[in-house]
Image 1 (spheres, protein in one colour):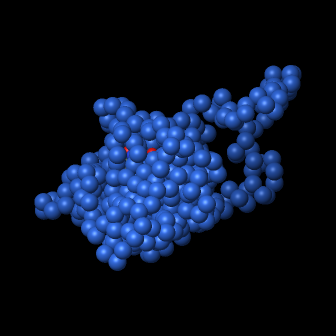
Image 2 (cartoon, rainbow, N blue to C red):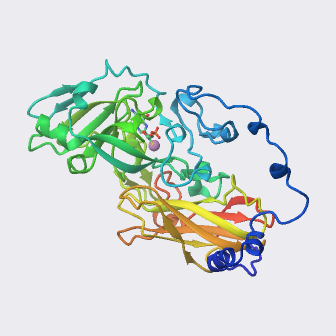
Image 3 (cartoon, rainbow, N blue to C red):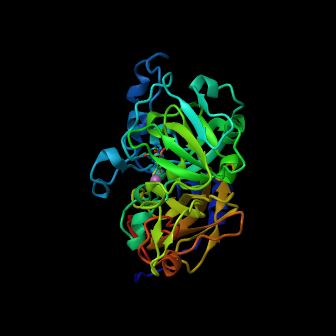
Length: 423
Ligand SMILES: Nc1nc2c(c(=O)[nH]1)N[C@H]1C(S)=C(S)[C@@H](COP(=O)(O)O)O[C@H]1N2
Ligand SMILES: [Mo]
C-alpha cells in the first residue's frame, strides 16, 4: 500500500470542548448549518397525521421496517449447500455488547434440528456411578446461573489467512455472537451422575441429523460449562440449539454442541471428525495443531468498515468496534488511523465481563485524507493481539482456524472503506 497521510490527529478533546463551548458554532460542525428551512422540521410528517397501531398489533415485536437491511448474511461461494453452511452476524450494524437473538450467526452441519422439547432427552452415560436421563422439566429443577459469553467459530476470519478477501466485518469477523445465557452448571449434572475416578473426558453429542460431537477435558466440564436453555432471557432459538445447548466459555464455537442429547464420560478423547479432520491446523513442518480450544484475544473495528463507510464527510467521526478473549477480559484496545504510525488507547464502554465481548470507541476529527484503520486488543493475561504476519510466521500458510490477527480497513477520501493488508 502506498497511500499519503497528512494532518490526521485524534481530537476527542477538541470535539468535546468545542461542543461544550458554545452551542451553535460547535454543533454546526456535526449538524446541518443554516440555509433553506428543513422540511423535516417545518412540514407535517405523515406519522403525525394518523393514530398508530394499538398495543396488540405485534404480539412478538419486530424491528422497524427501516432496519430491514440488518440481517444475517451468507457468502454463497463459501459453501455448496445451506444445510451444512454458515451465515454471519451483522457486526457493523450493532452496538453495545449483546447480540440480538435474531442476528446471531448460524453454523449447522446438518441443518436446524426441529426438536420437540417434550420428547427431548439429555443422557449421561459412560464412566459414571449412575447413568441418567433428564427431560427438559428435570433440567429446570437444577439451580441456574446467568452469564454473558461470546461464541466464536474457530473458522472466523479463516479466509483472511490467505490475505484480505471479504469486504465487510460481517464476513471477516461475523462468526461470533455474544449472548446472556441462562443455564445449569454442567458440573451439577456430572456430580448427580457421579464421575468415576478414571473419567477424564466427556463426549458431547447433538440430536441433529449431523449428530455432531466433540471431546472436552473433565476439568473444563467441571469448571464453567453450562447446560443452557435461555438466550438473552428467552428460549434458545431453533438455530442456536433449542431446547438445550452446551456453553463452553472462551472455547471454540464448535464445542458448544447444540440440541444437546448425550454426554458420555470416558478416560480419553474420542478423536471425532470435528477434532481431527476439522478444527485442526496443519503446520509447515507437517505436524498439526490439535485441540486448540481457547480463543485468543481479538478485535475488529466495526465502524467505519466496508459495509459502513463514512458518509458525513470530514469532521468529528466516531470509530467503534468489539474485542474479546477466551482467557478473560479486555482491559485495553489500541487503535490507529494511519496504519500503525501512531497508536491511541480506545475508550472501553459497557460491562467488562469475563469471556464476553467488549465495546470500544475512538472519537477523532477526520481531515478527509485516506485512513488505514486497525485495532489491537490486550487481554487480562497481558496477551496482545498479533499481526497476521506474526501469526503466519509461526503457523505457516496452511491454517484455516484461529486467525486472530489485526484487521486493516483502508478508507479513501470519499469515506469508502475496503479490506486491505499492510505489512
Ligand atoms: N449439534 C450441533 N452442534 C453444533 C454445530 C452443529 O452443526 N451441530 N455446529 C457447531 C459450530 S461449528 C459452531 S461454530 C457453533 C455455532 O453456533 P451458532 O449456530 O449458535 O452460531 O455451534 C456448534 N455446535
Ligand atoms: Mo464452527
